[in-house]
Length: 229
Image 1 (tube, one colour):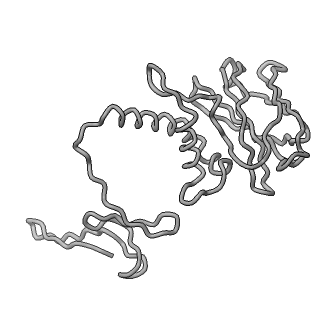
Image 2 (tube, rainbow, N blue to C red; image 1 turned 90 degrees about the vertical axis):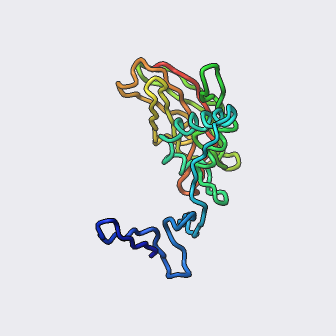
Image 3 (cartoon, helix red, strand yellow; image 1 turned 135 degrees about the vertical axis):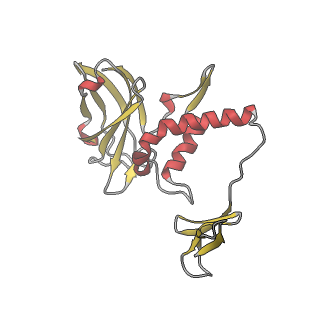
């Protein structure tokens, strides 16, 4: 443990703990010592320079990148727990959520006259090796209900009859996401979504993917379109 002992003007003893050594003096430490910050990241002891506040004005290009990043982060954050399971495995030091951020920054955000917004048709809620939905179709079948159908492609590549359908719903006006973790299987080729009254009259965007917990795989999702519930 690193600490500094000081006496103030009233001769009161003050002990300021700055950092903690985890495995003795030769081990890693957490906390700040001078201009260095120690931490443990993904099981590794990491040293980095303490951040310094920049006095340089932000350029237009920097502000544009910050706004773009903020748009994507705000959109994806409610999905973080889901994306951790559905957006592939860790790649090096990048987590599934990092991979999702990287993809959407490059492919699924667009600039308008008023700022950045998401391109819903390019958003992915899952990315992986399973075969995705083949020829999906969404149809209103009753008040406040939608039916999804698709072709059974369970004989192709990485596609299993018991793959489970997962549907993600986004309501822009409410800025909210919802998941339908269904019991609909790939081989059944149909799934009914019955919406709660909080969705009534709202426009919703749908994405669907297949998951398989037995082989820990997810399909790359497909955007199904926008519908009024």
